[in-house]
Image 1 (tube, rainbow over the protein chains, first blue to last red):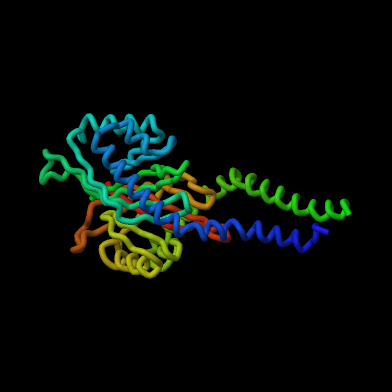
Image 2 (cartoon, one colour; image 1 turned 120 degrees about the vertical axis):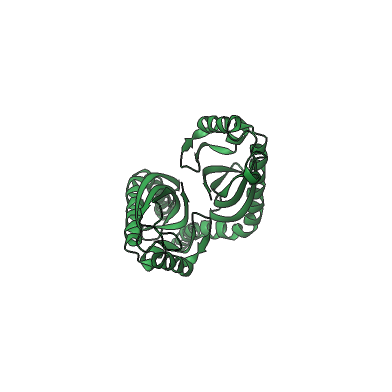
Length: 157
Length: 161
């Protein structure tokens, strides 16, 4: 009748082989859309940062996001992140403006990517108008269709 | 006939149930041993670097690994990585010695982790051969578990401060 042993074996094989094949086949189409979405997210972060809205900047991170400063000082989670941004926006970066340009994106999984971003912080009072420049390196994850920062590192040079 | 059908379906049901249970149960236990394995990966890399063995240092990366220097200069893939290490080990870092201390590990998936490492360096020189001040900073690696269980560097970033 229906329960033919070879059919069961076939079903198991299809189950095992099916998922990677499907996810691999989906990748190219999604990747272009995800690349565009990540770039939009970087622009949105830059604009939020430039409005010096500490709460909105912290909301670009996942709930338990990690930030590390140019000196390797850590902030963990949205509460600490918002405190960190409140401090910098009311003190040494209160006149600062950032320009963030995506240099490269490397996908580690369909919903996980590493992003390198050239950054330049300008300030009318700084020598030559440039306060800082360097590289931001983010790990971003897609949750409920939205890309967010999971881990943020920055280096200045 | 029903008995026969049951006999055929039962193994399949058991197969899926056991497979799912094993996948779920493995994760927490592996995290501890994976943390140990990642620290070993860092220590082995540090050792290769301190021997100034460009081939072994580059071999800690996956085949298409990415490196970015403290000034954001990238190297991509095994060939470029080995050339990069050859260059630094025969010029301004030929007498340098480094210390790497894992600060934190964040698992992004069971097979991918982000690792923060405090680094220090003595014995570096300037590009024109004069003694340079000691350097320190933070490395941020993305490491991935390879088939066979070995952890390797997929992406390497470093900052100096």
